[in-house]
Image (cartoon, rainbow, N blue to C red; front, side, top):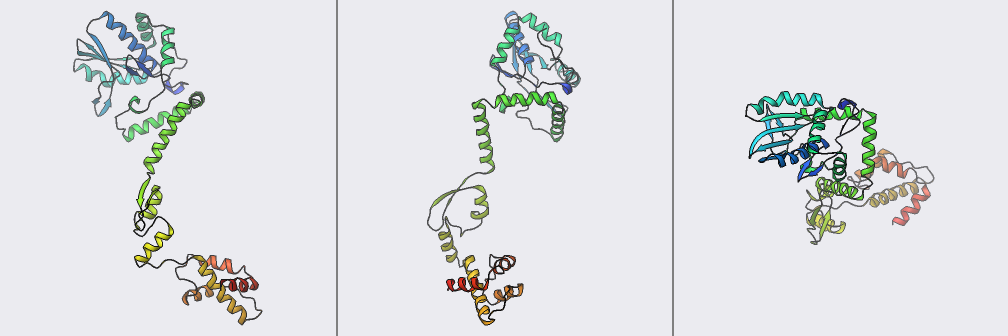
Length: 334
């Protein structure tokens, strides 16, 4: 027997679709497809006018998009279509047979779902395909289901299809054997520097698409600057007074009549000066800054009303200072 599975259905399967690659310029998505394509190539030698194609057309049957695996032609006329399934997918094969047979036969096209092991053994015997030929194709095959190699390429998934795919994926990964086999394949693949490089390039493209870089020109000095997407949205997009640096930004705001925010140090120096005067007047009394002191300082202009320092921050800072520190630091500020 050429090929045999140790499990009966996909739910208990420890394997995924293992091999995919090119044969006679056709991209084949499984070993079973390779067996059937090899058989058709040999059949072309015996039957003149026989040709075939792979996934050439998509049909919409009862609102469902369907792309058969093989299209068989006799003298350039479509004779039949063949769907290739694994022997473990008996339920799926029977569903395909039931849903699509009448559609194709009503149009004079033969329809066959290939899935039984004895059928694969029979065509392998007729075509002369043996283990040597199978192993050779396995070594030459590749594991690439990206882009046009994906079975669902070009087809838009409905929410129902997404839900079904998600449920099947959960069932597969609930099997510990499947998880171990999947983890082993990923580990082996990641040892290949070409695969790692391909993944890295793909991730960079995704990141660049989500976070594109922007080239902006400073309105004041005309300097070009490359910035990130978040910087562009938060600062440059809606602010005509934003410059390439703090100095340019300040000049632009002054030209627009905007009062530039004083630095945080001004608030600190102002309140230290006020506390120093109170310390001198009250001699050796312990001075504690309260919320009322902060509000009064803001009303009198000692602290800027739009100060970036919160009341909590001011209280925490100044209540930790001693009288000596207030006097010394205030004198330095003057």
